[in-house]
Image (cartoon, rainbow, N blue to C red; front, side, top):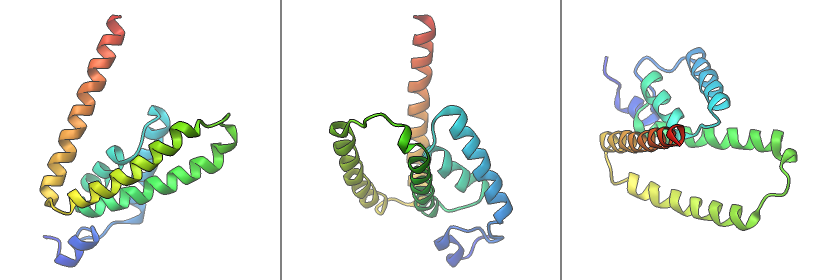
Length: 141
């Protein structure tokens, strides 16, 4: 059965997202984040699209909310363990990231869901390739 227009708008498939499945995917992502020390949209978006049948636009917005909540929880639990943040780096990095997010949203509004998915996949391949090259160079050196 094909999702209805309202289903595509909300990002849910025609059958709906089951909370148990969403919880299992979230637990798996949390485990990968803890194990690899990485997270963010490159893990959340594919899980939302591939496993939970979200449309790409809904997955990107949902992943941002998930990342924000995870970041706040991490800051709350680990904030006291940091020894002197370098605000000369943190402030401009954060400011530039916010401005970049606004620009990215503007660009994304001009692209179809399929174009966004292909772009996202291409970026993932480039990052994976760079990580592979780095790992090979480090192992050889």
